[in-house]
Length: 464
Ligand code: ATP
Ligand code: MG
Ligand code: MG
Ligand code: MG
Image (cartoon, rainbow, N blue to C red):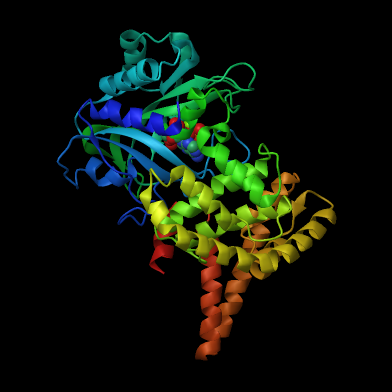
């Protein structure tokens, strides 16, 4: 089954069961400064769950484009290392706004997986929240799941969109890719392996967490589910890695072609094929590379892709050339991608050219610093210099260091940033244009880094 067929089968299954098909919303959440990017299918429905946005339907289904490259759900560092994580992916979902609840949500998911997709039951494992006797009972008594294949977990089975917003206990479905792959079932000591892959999360939305951390009950218990399209495609196509599915094959071949590196299993090519999707779709949704907020995340992803190409020996701008392959793969499902294609290419090319000027020199400095290391920690001053002079975002340096088993002196780096800020402040006291320019530079650079990991700071940055 091709990815497109799975997408269609999912939407039809839920449409037949009274769900309205809602088109994918933008990756930039509407009117929501608490969130960096749309990171799940429920994001466009956040206010519906909260009872603030009445809709003409109580059930919806969607294929939502998602980016997880910052904030609470950040998979940037997983890309290239796991078989199942992307920065950009499509989340299939069904939603109930105060209509059906646990029993129907579980029944629908099970029917879709075991009847429509016809996956064998003995390959499936489920989890519920440690406190959720009701969900455990439904799985075991109503659905007939073997209790040995059900585990009760704590944090992993409580889902939240961000530090605030709708949340609730959840129940997840895992697929066992078989003993050739290392890993154990959820809750076991080997669960970090990639053998048992989480394919679908059913969230029993019950609370709205406020800024003080308090959980207030939602107007009505609701359902939010998310099934990763690429992960399900891997299962249906009998491959272990998401990067081996139909959608990625041509992207990887195109990446191999433009970098001149033929082995499509190379992690760097996977990183590039992943990153072209998030970068292109972020530009589709109006994000442009910059030194702050969402634009800085985009810039970091582009630079990371360019660095991986450089590592494979690409000496000319290559990244923008992949937009054509992406269009061929996804332009039909996403006409807005096709319409924006020229602009995406221009933006990427410009960013590539700009970074190319410093990448070589920066890499040289980094290589020298790495070979001169006596312990396995890269000093803060080096990280800062790479950042300030060569445009290496912190996580790009971290990405290179990780390949070498070196860690980073993050505290030292932050001290350097702070010192730079102080200098800028002092300079600005002289007044006039010169000082103002320095102040601006210092503060944008600083917030650019500041917002890397912490979605709660996005408000401040977006406002700037
Ligand atoms: P994992 O534990 O594997 O990181 P998750 O628990 O963070 O996944 P959820 O937040 O529950 O994922 O998202 C719902 C579904 O979306 C997942 O079950 C999975 O199928 C899919 N998904 C989540 N993150 C990614 C990703 N980075 N790339 C591809 N698919 C993803
Ligand atoms: Mg995750
Ligand atoms: Mg999980
Ligand atoms: Mg999950």
